[in-house]
Amino acid sequence: MLNGLERSLKVLNDDCSAKVMMIRSSVPKVFCAGADLKERRTMSPMEVQSFVNDLRSAFSLLEALPIPTIAVIEGAALGGGLEMALSCDLRICGENAVLGLPETGLAIIPGAGGTQRLPRLVGKSVAKDLIFTGRKVSGAEAYSMGLANYCVAPASAYSKALEVAREINQKGPVAVRMAKQAIDEGFEMDMTSALKLEEDCYENVLHTKDRLEGLNAFAQKRKPIYSGE
Image (cartoon, rainbow, N blue to C red; front, side):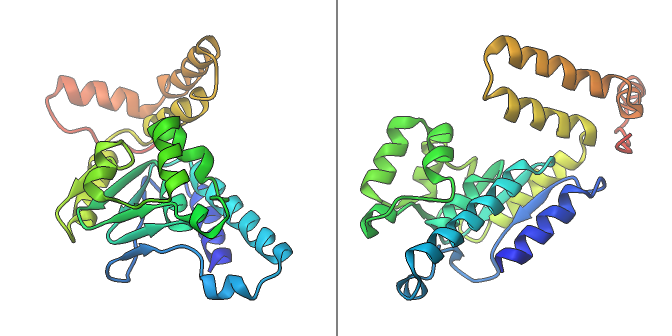
């Protein structure tokens, strides 16, 4: 399963026609409940470490995709499941969602990026609360703390994600990719370096056909038709 995810991510990374990716579950009331603890009991520490390293690598590939990614969360997103959602750009939850990193209750810590991505998203103090206690939060609470971008009625997360994806798809594809690069890479830099990065990313959209199409469409009071060029 993990190998399949990595293969799919690598294909998407090289697909210039891809604009948005969504991750959702086909299992009712479960987005992803994390590791199989019965299986973990039969694994040696070395095998567990290898598995967690592979998981961390896969989620890093997900995070590094050049296109926007959306986690569609209905039901449980726990442990590695939440860590996968944290690797996405946006998280859309149903009100019945349950999110948490319960690892400390098993005498371990989140090992696939949770200790790093969660504080960057919700702040260090809130992340410590969630990780130290291992407590689970609802979709509404996740939204209130900035863990989720949207919280909608149960069973409505996918339709909301489609709405957001369609809105993104109407924008210039190169501009969206450059905006993601500027935000993600600039977040780790000092302001002077980040502003230089923004300048470079802006330069990449300045000479595109899409930029001229956007200006012409505005002048002609019509919707732009972007080609990604």
